[in-house]
Length: 479
Image (spheres, rainbow, N blue to C red):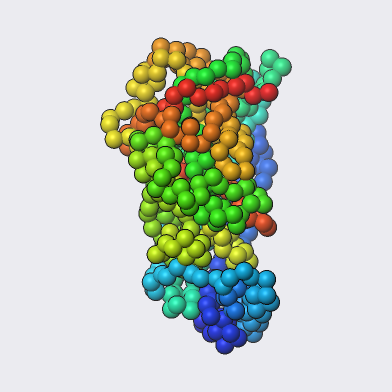
């Protein structure tokens, strides 16, 4: 494979490329899903190929193939250069790349147990056991569970002289119980953090031990009163915060979006470069750290698809907006000395684009547990898990739901609620944060299906947080 990838680089240079990189990537994916006491999905697939990206006459060109022969690799490299030269007639200015040191490196995610070595019947057996434990509760009429495994082997080279390889495993699991009655249906989900680890991330005892709680809360949710429209304090758990920060912090701080290059799928960004180091994005206790070196992080892969080594940096520090996720191209546009290493493609056949990093709300510095935070809240709502959401094209005006909701009165959870959504504007919301639990309660939740681009690409990233409180937020009944 090394000979083929170097052949691609050499061919591109011979054809007139001023820069070229190539990725040979091999994927193995397995998805298993069970519905009640049957297997509803079982997919096991492999995919591999090479993608060649070049700059010629100041413009990008890209081509790929799944046929890994010397003749085909040379053809594809030449095609990428031809595309770049044709594209040059439409460019406004030549592509410039921020500098990056030459790297010779290998990266491996943690993997004690290869998930593909574990028999399928073992995995299916666990999922069916989970479903059976949920369905034994009267009123639970539907139980679903899943497992997802991915192995990605990647070899990267570029004309700068970098040559790097990686092997990354991803594992995820979860389940949902649905209660039916009272003319209604309500669900409750349990989703442990997905991680770039092996099968050791599938904790059998934990999964089974949570079935009782999940089923009972689905039943309670069914009978819960609807929320009244109000302005109140919110206490949000890490999984709920994961989606909120993903949409209102992660996407706005992608520099291609802030520069207006990404609009078709999910809009632009209010966090434009003129606001760097000026915008009060959140309260002084709010710190958002991007960390693509985070052990087990879903975006932790050693190096990105620009050949930039993965890094750690601030997006928001002490409440002030101070950083972006970038590629080498857009980093150069605003004079950054180096890219943050946030460029990824979802396939050998996809063009690398700017993607969210592992982005986390950092824990509070003073000892504080979720129980103590709730006890300190006189009147409010506690929300767990992800639900529906919407956000405007500039990533400011939003609404979020959740998976489970409880009314807080005088520091106690008094009963569940349903149909809860909270509404705010990004800066107003994060500036209303007045308490964050400490590092003991920080959880690295993640997103496995972030869509971006046209044609759309899917990426994964971790969003860690500890339970946090937000003062006087608008709550409305979902209708």
